Length: 187
Image (tube, one colour):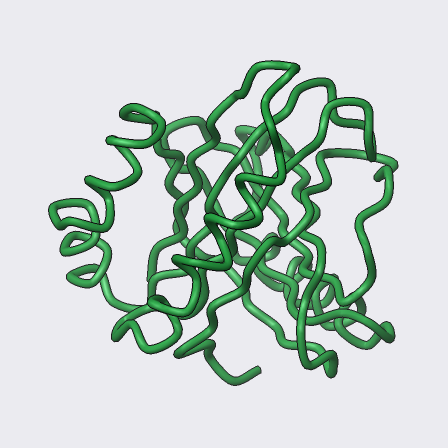
């Protein structure tokens, strides 16, 4: 499995409604993508929910590495490049995935934490699993995912919520414009 996210920073006067139309148009094409756990078309609006910029982003959970490779080398990613330029792509190794009882998601929350050099990784995996179990037991939670950025030794935590985005205590909040989940793994 592999997680990926790329973020396009947009001008302050960007017509953000164009992104909702783009997601509504392109999103259904992802609903049957083999090897994909989920893809969120997400956005931040400057001045809302703690966002300092307008941004458009996609967050992926790939179940199969080959499917991720096919995406990057195929016409779907070329559409991204044609529309917004070639982005830097953050990648993570998923450490823990738990599903909640919510049937859909309207917001993604992301929190990044540097991993201490003396971290016991087996203990980290256990504690993140316990944390995610607790999170998905809360009403309105669609999924909780923890992943490791091995290039920067950073832990990234993602929570997909059925509730509208709000300003988080830590990290970033994104509005989900479209959620495709053709192969989300069972909890």
